[in-house]
Image (cartoon, rainbow, N blue to C red; front, top):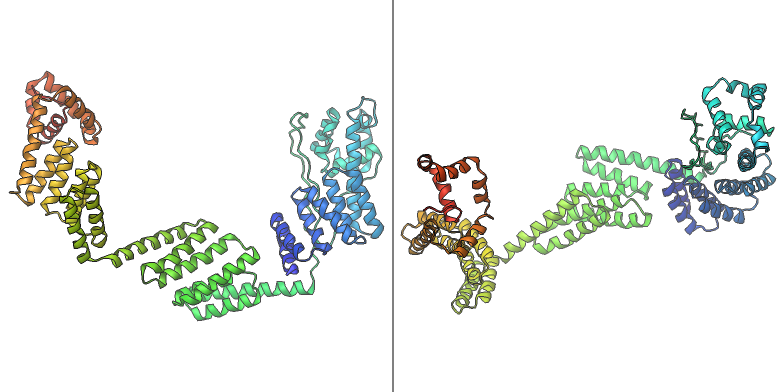
Length: 584
């Protein structure tokens, strides 16, 4: 198992996924804590993320476990270099060369560390009084020295190189900004008479060392010339050392992917049996990829083999957690299981495990498709519950109990019985009408209005629904709306005494407003309530109605013409009923 995690870590490192590589190497170390190669590889991954302290810790562990292995010293030197501990880096590389004198990676690392050490020392001296060695190196004779050397003479024809040196003449402390440019390193070797070996990619067999990154220039340092510097190419990843076992694993993985592709092709052709065979073979070759299981589960789902689908999904979730697979893959397995459970549901309780499974999936990954499936399952469960609870005979008994409570003025108890009746029979218009009456008695006007409207929706010819709604609107002092409700009810039952009385009461209240018989408090209350009505607001903001209202005050003849328009007359009547307009 440790070798499997190591292989995954190597692959992630080669792909540049250093955080993932660290996770895999850590898993491998937990299984094989004395394997020096694992610490070495994780050190390289840490260094690639500029986490040099962690890289140093792993490098030291590598050397402790395998003191005669030159690779450990290479890691140690790279970590010290990244921490700018150049003297320690040089020492580490030298110790490595004692074990392996011909190791080119160690030689290159040593040269880089020595160059950085020399540059750091020179930079430090550049902040001393002017007459120091480094100041003299970038003095007036710098150009002559560089022209005299055959290697740097060619660079003098390159404008960007010349500009960099001019910047260094002005401010030698900017040297660290140009250390990655090999031309500058060559120039320093000429000016300081120090031989500096160029940095070249090594051929280390385990994993490429991560070169220390160039530091950023502090904001208060002199800004260098703005010409773009030539960037050195990134070193290619070093070839990994692969054992025979790792080669066999890689071959199986490749073969498994081919089986998966064949399974996908068969699935698209709806050749489900063939697809199952390919996915099964793929998982036998590589049990570290749960997508083979989730794909096979999808095939079983299409075939109607829901039990097999659920088994594959459960296995995918279990295996995915063992492998710490992508949470999206685990979520996909859970969603697929939930879908199979929904397909198998026959009663409302059957939806409960499906809903729970969808919720678990959403905790792994909030996918819109899974959320929709969850909402659909919850809705289907509720509808089935209503169907299972449906019992008109029982509903009638509950409604009768509510009527008895209503007669005894036990309105809250009556509401409970009417509510139970509606659960048993949601299409009972009488229960809605009776519950609306209870709400009206308790002063819960919005709830009463809602029940009355539901009553009318279920049975538009049931006059009680209109009397309930009109009564609520009348109590809310929306007399014009109540009048409309009563008149609508009379269309279905022209001789209904309650509706006729409602019309009479509404007209009486409206006429009081039009005659100006309202008390100041009543008028103020009615106007305030009217101003909250969107319909009244629309009338008052209508430019045509604004002109009409102006004519009513200033031009009686024009006002009479306006009154001949039924639409305008209706709006004026609404304003009169609301107390906004008074006729004298």
